[in-house]
View 1 (spheres, rainbow, N blue to C red):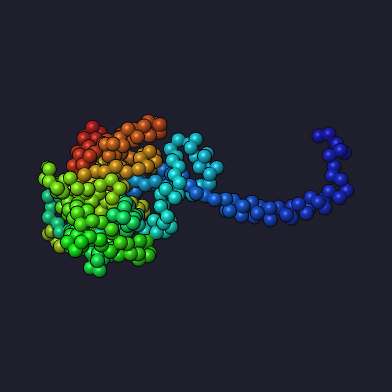
View 2: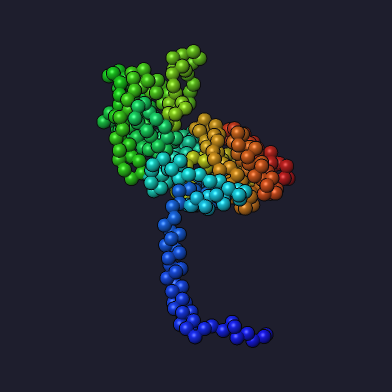
Length: 377
């Protein structure tokens, strides 16, 4: 190596270099503080996890077989505008504004609401499984919950996870009870006060509706509770339903008791919130209630909401959930029909051997699993 005097530090530069080194930790701390001060108004949606829904059930007989029922979830990270812009360039990433998701709620209240929606989804999943299996059961409503937020009349804005504690001062434990209250308020001339639990807060809202609107909404609640459709051409059919566009979607927190033992189905707390694990939870319960190994030895993953009548509903984050399922080694991914193309496109990008199957009902999902298992033999 050649020696070059010109590269030696000047006489006072060693002192300056030492001082600079002493300042480095403070400069690094300043950079961290600056980073923390940068606004992070976005969420980046990434692949999350795939966990066995059967593990949410209490120990019992028969246990699941060699396969598994994997419910899938997304991962959501805070992001600055720069990070959000960079995420758009990465396949399998999705960006959303926090305010669009939270709608004025705190993250803590939002997550508390999603937990309640998950609890309602577990009850719906269990009821759908009991119905399909033919086993006897008893649903015991405990609370009314808002599954999807929306406006109820003038000024009453409800959000997902809201619990309806009372209507016009009367306790509410079921959709039928809420419908009866709205009917009574309609007969009194319209308008109803609701007491809600939202996150950790108790709030009061005033539902400003005409007599006819209250009656129509009460009828919609009864349809939601019973699963029946209004007669063709009836006034109820013409009136806005309880889950019409812009209106809240309703559900119940229910205890599902086994008809033979009388024991309640007690779920363990899930690692995710919201309704999208409904399909996989229903399959796990159905597998418990029926003979044989419903998985056929497969690792079955999927996503989709579940109604008590066995209908599968659309969700979001399908591409990220497919990635999570593939990473977990799933053999089959079940998806609502309207989101099949998105799931197939994601699987193709990932070049995974995992198969994709669409299912509009719980029965169709069980049949799709059986068909795939038969092909593997």
